[in-house]
Image 1 (tube, rainbow, N blue to C red):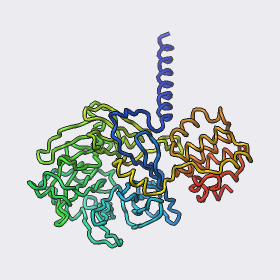
Image 2 (cartoon, rainbow, N blue to C red):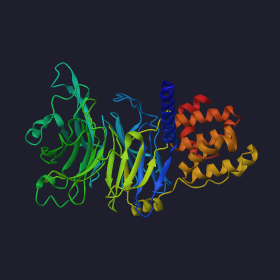
Image 3 (cartoon, rainbow, N blue to C red):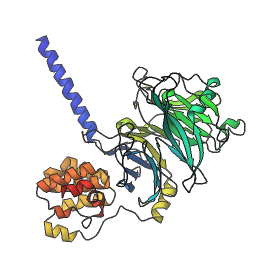
Image 4 (tube, one colour):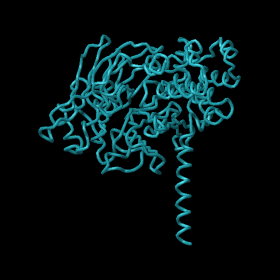
Amino acid sequence: MKKSFYIFLGILFFNGNIYAQNLEKQKIGVTYYNKEKTDDSYRLYSSRNLTTAHLISPAGKYVHTWYYPHKEDTVTVNFGGFGMTWHYAEMLSNGHLIAIVKDEMIIELDWNSNLVWKAKLRAHHDFARDSKGNTIVVSRKDLPNPWEPGKTIAMDELVEFNKKGKIIWQWNYEKHMDDLKNLVKETLPPDETFRDWPHINTCEILPKNPLEKKDKRFKAGNLLLSARHSDIIMIINKKTKKIVWAWGPGKLQGQHMPTMLPNGNILIFDNGHHNSKISRGYTKVVEMNPISKKIVWEYGSNREFFSPARGSAIRLKNGNTLIANSDNGWFFEITPSGEKVWEYYNPDLGRGGHRMGLYRTLAYDKQMVDKLLARNTSMYYKRPGKEKFQEKYGLSDQLMKVVDWIETGSLDEAYRWLNDNGIETIGEKETYFAYSLLFSVRGNIYQSVNSMKKAVEAGMPRELFSREFSDFFKSLTESSHFKDFN
C-alpha cells in the first residue's frame, strides 16, 4: 500500500512538472503590466537564433522590426555553433540598427533594414559607437596558448573603425594582462573548458560622470569592459591603453553588462555562474560604488531568477531596472524595492519547441522613439485590398481579423489567439496560414515554411502565400526554403 502511494506521488509530481513547463511555454509577450509603476520607455529585443530585432511598447505593441537575411554571407568560423544568426542587436539614436554575427561580422542597417555598413571580423558580444561616429568592436583572434604549449586560445581585442570603415585604433588583451597584477587577483591559468580569454562581453564608453573630476581613471571616454571568464570588470584608459581600474574576483561570477549610472555607480548583471565547478546557482543585479568598491543596491539574493550564461540590466529614467533573464527568454522590470511591475516572455520558439534565449534587452526613451516613428514610415499598419482574396478564396472574417492584428503590430495577441482558439475556430488551413504570416514577419523562416506546408496540406492555395496578399510574406517568399518548397 505504501509503495503504491509513493508511485502515485511520483506520477503526480512528474505530471505536475510537465504541466508547469507547458504553462511556461504558453506564456507569450506581456504577462504582467502595472502601467502606473512601469517606465514608459520602448524595449528592444532580438532572439539569439534569428536575424530579427523588435521594438515594442510597454503594452506589448510592436512599433518596428528589423530583419536581414544575410543571403550573400556564409559562415566561416561558427564559434559556438550559432551560424549566421545575430548575437546582439542595438538601435542607434538615428533609428539605425547595429547587429553582430558572432565571430563573423558586424553590420549596420537603416530604419528600413537596408545594409549601410559591414565589417568582417571575429566580432562578438558588444560594440560602442562614439560621438564622432566611430565604432569600437569587441573581437578576438587565435593565438598560442601561454598556459598550454602547443595549443591555441582565442584572445580578445578591441578594434575601432572610423565612419569610412578604416581601422584607426586597436587594443589587445594579451599585451595588457600584466596591468591587472596590481589591481586584482586574476585566476590563471584559465579553466580548461574555456576556448577564449578573457571573454569580454561588454564595451561601454564612459559618459560624463561626477567621479571624473576627482579621479582621472573614470574620465569620460575611457572604456568600461566586462571579462566574463575572469570575473573581472575593468576600465582602460583610451589614450594609454592601460588597464587603470578593476574589480570582481570573489564578488562576481560570469558577469555581464556593467554600465555607469548618472551618479557614477556601476550597475552589473552578476550571473552567478563561472563554470560547471564554480556556480552560485542564482543571478543578482548589483549596483556598486567604484571608489569604495562597496555594493549599495542589489536584487536577486532571494533566488528570484537564474541566467547562467547571458543577461542584462538597465536602470530606467523612473528609477526602475529592466532585467533580462536571457537564457530563459524572459525579461522584466522591477522598482528600487524589488517589486515586479512588468514582464515579457519571448514568443520565439526553436525547432524543439523551447523558448529562444536573448542576449540583452534594451530600453529607449519614449520621446526619442516617437520622433523616429513620426519621421519614418511605419511598417505596422493595415494593408488595404484584402477583400478580393477573401471573396475569391472564401477566407473567414476571423482570419482577416487575425491578419489585421499581425499587420498593425499586435503580433503577440495574434499568436496567443491562434494557440488558444485557432484550429477549433477557423480550422487548420487558415490557422497555419496565419502562423506562416506571423513567423515570416518575426524572421523565423523555418517555422514560417513549416506552417505554410501544413496549411497547403490542409487545402490552402499556394498562391495566397505572396507579397500581393501581404508584404509581411516578404521574408518567407525571398527565402531559399520557400523556393525549394515550390
